[in-house]
Image (cartoon, rainbow, N blue to C red):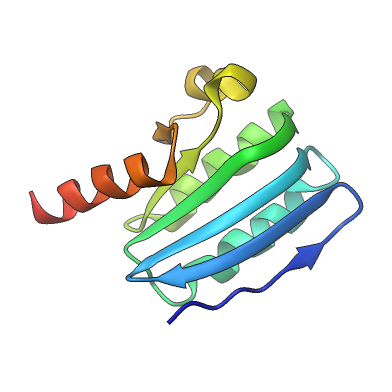
Amino acid sequence: MTAVHPSVASSLKISMQIADGTVILSIVGTVDTTTTPMLSAHVANALLPRPRTVLLDMRRVTSCTPAGCQALVRAHHTALPIRVAIVADTRRCGHLAEECPVPLYASIDEALTAHRARTTG
C-alpha cells in the first residue's frame, strides 16, 4: 500500500510514499535554516512505521546549505538502525557527497538495489 502525504512551506515541499518497507521522502525546494525543522519533522514521521529504509529524494532540491547538511547527518544518526540514503543530482548537490556521511545515489532504483543487496547479502 502506498500513502502520499503532501506538505507545503514557503520554499520547501515534501511528500511521503510508503511501499515494501521503504519510505521515500520527495523533497522539492531549498533546504536551509528556515526549512530544516520541517525536514526533520518529516524524517521523524517517516521513521514511525519502522521501515527498513528511508530514501531522501533530493533530485529536485535547488539548494542545500550547511544547515541542511547538518539536518541530514542528524537524520542519519537518529534513524539507526534504519538505513537512510540520499538520492540527488550530484552535479547540483555534489557537496553532499563530501560533507554528509549519508550514502548518496543518483537514482531511486540505484538506492533501492543497494539497500536490498545489504538486506539480503
